[in-house]
Length: 240
Image (cartoon, rainbow, N blue to C red; front, side, top):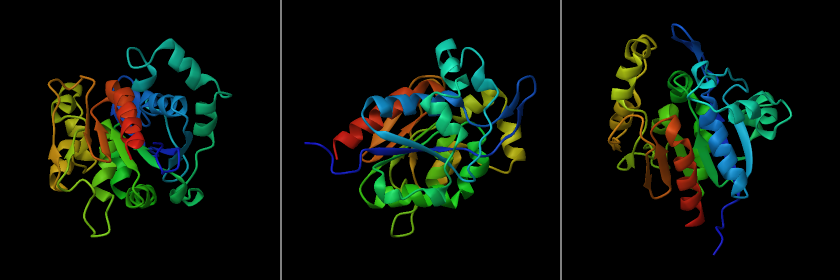
């Protein structure tokens, strides 16, 4: 039986950027963490829109290098006529979005999401409305930074009392990113999830493709998990 929810997905994009990689430049949107879900949702018959808190984005420098992106994926990103790139170049703002018309919210990421997602009230309100209406809320990697601020009617985070995953503290250490994150005065995904009352589930390894589904909440660990997380979000949507 088809879901009664609108077959439309909205992917949030970080609008922040900051120096993170001494040799490779700035962090911003991790391209495949938006591109993979975009392609999965389109293939599953969803209309898909892209939105950031201020209607802007900066690409994450590392995400445009191998092994993080394939030649074919980079070709899609560089093609300004591709549907994905066209929507990135014409990002919506929260004020452009009627959340009641969407059945699925997906928070893409990049380390920069740690900077703007915790305070991105516009994006949080979109996700909260979709959740309230019975839709799916999902996030991958550092996209989980938005989840503590998505509140239900009781005023609690929607992840309170639920199982989630996201980029690991171990992964931050391996990347040498912990000090920089601390200089932004932002918590890691693990600590922010626990502070919001969630049970954080860690994968065996920080670079494993891994996702956790808890009812209508779907979360994934890292760039390698963007596809499986989006597929799990579609599966959860179909089960509504």
